[in-house]
Each structure stands twice: as structure tokens, then as C-alpha cells.
Image: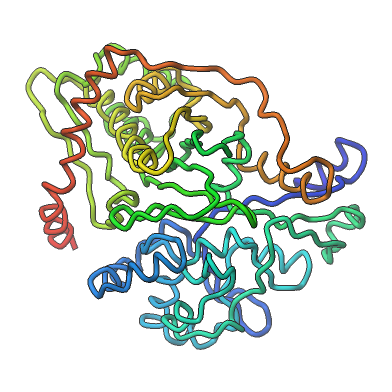
Length: 437
């Protein structure tokens, strides 16, 4: 519907359509090419026990080194094993284990193909050899025939086989990459010293690199953008969803409108940097980077009778920014980060941007495009069809935010305390998780 509407508005079919897609999804398809499972999203944590077994057995490092993806319940690798152990009938009926993009691609072209970027986020792909890995596949008790053919991210195919898209007979489709990799392309963050930071429901910080950046302690991800480029970084589970939780919890607003967000940030603005000694560990949805712990939970520490709801709101915003600083801190060890290009919901709030800039203490460039990943998909499509040279597409006008020295000094001290909260409380978090079952 979207493609047909766009075609009517511009008056002719597009030359190329590029596809951006989220990572770690899984659909089971039978021999008749029919989905026999719901779409299992990245946030599905049922396979947490599988991931934990890999960590305890020592296999997680080999899986990480081979596949480039951190060992976590989000991985299709762990999800497939969970299905084998818990839904054997479904597992046995599955002819293909695919992502949502592969399902869409099959509907368009009647062929199962996966781009290298989405494949590199499955835990089943060898990022050095650029093919499905036998060791990783065998962990799942499946065969390579149950996975799609691998193609590069600039792979083009036409014509479409779907009658609903008859107007696109001459339109090429570029299979594209994952949303995270394409976001770096969309905000022009391909230089080693420039990071891309995105906050939507969750959040992530990523840098481009000619080779994978391995960190066994924190498991930086290493996903493929193209033949020459890896996108490396860390995702956090708690971004815009945590701000929504804050609105619901402290302002009793279930379905916030734009005015409600303005009210929330206005309340936070009345509180000084550091929230007068109140720190929030924002792991209310568990956490991925740097702890990769599905059982992690949130913490407020430093609460006194002087703290008001506005303090808690400010602390929540600061906590989300501390989590993103944790990613930047690790990336900075490998690539000196001099600039962070920011995109996503955060750019609509000057206060949130200011807090982030002061906490990370790095120059921030605000990239105003509504969806950097979709833009990256279009740029990759342009390059694949020869419309542009490799990615030489201007990012457009951007605003710059510089850190305030006084606030940056305050936040540095608070971040040191924040960084200790998980390790100090990990066992208690896990005990509470067991009690809550």
C-alpha cells in the first residue's frame, strides 16, 4: 500500500526500492511456504536459559568470536534451540527458519534469500568466512538447507512476483541491511571517530570499522554493512520505552501526547544535574549491553525525603543517558570518539539532548531525518544501482550541541557510582527474579 501510494504521488514507479529491517526476528515456515509460528521478536526472552547455559559452559566466547553477535536470548540461534527443546512438534515441521525480511522477500520474489547484515545478527553466520557456520548451525540441530541463501547487502532483484505491485515491473529491489547498520549510513557516521546514537523504543551506539571490534567482557556487536564495513557497538534495552514508563508511573499518563512529553521535560528541567544525589539504573526491561542479563532490573539509589517526583523524572532521563555512555566508553577504547551523530525521538527534546551531551562529554550533531535507517536503505539502493558513488550522499543540515563543562564534571562523578550499581546488586536482582516467578 505504501509503495503504490508513493508511486501515485510521484507519478511514476521508483527506479529502486531499498529495504531496512530490524534484527533478530524469527519465523518458522513449513514445506508449503506457510508460516507456522508467530513472528518472534528481538525482545522475546524465552530463550534466556539457553543463552545462560552457553555462558556457563564457556561456549559463548566461541559463538561470539565466530558470529560477531553477543550471546543473548534475542539471537535466532538461542530461539531455535528453545523451540527444539520446548516446542518439538513445531521444530520438526519447520522447513525454513527465516526473519521477517526473508518472509517479505519470499512474498516478493518466491525465493529465500538473506542479506549478510541480517544474517550476521542471527548467531548462525560466520562473519569472517561470510557464510552460515557449520558449528553454529549444528548447535541448533538444523541444516544449512533450512536457512536462506546468503547475498550481499547491495544485491538487486526484479521483477516482483506479487500482483499487487504490478506498477513496479521495472523497479529493482535492493535487499538492504539491518536498521542499525543503515542508521549509521543514514546519519553519515562512517568515519572511525564518528559514532551514531539512536534512541527509539530502545537505544544503541555504533561506529563503522573495517574489521570487527571484539570485547569479550562487554560483547560489542559486529554486524555487516557491506563487504568492506562492519558496524560495531552496543544496544541498550531501555530508551524511549523507559521515558514512557516514567510518564505512566510518575504522571499517571498511559497514552502520552506531545504536550505530555513537554510537561515531563519541563519538570526535569527544574532539577539540577545529578538530581540532587538520586541515581537511576534503567534496567526495567532487563539489559543487553554491557551486562547481557535478561534478569537485570532497575534501581533507584540515594532516595531522601527531599526528593520530589521531578527528581525521579530527571534521574530516569539521566539513567538512560548513563546507559548510552557505557557503550561509548567501551567504543572509545577501540576508536577515539570525537563526535556523536544523534537521531531518533531524543532530538525532539532540547533538554534530553543537553543532558546526553553533558553526560557523554562529547560534541553532538543532531541529524533531523525522521528515520535514519530508512534513509540509509535508500542510499544503499542508490549506490547499488549506480546512481551515486559509494555512499557519497550529503547528510543535510545538522545542529551542534557542545557539553557544558560544569555539568560534565558533575556527571562524571555520578557516572562512576552508576557504573558500580549492577555488579553490586546483580545477585539480589537474580534472587528477586526467582522470587517473582
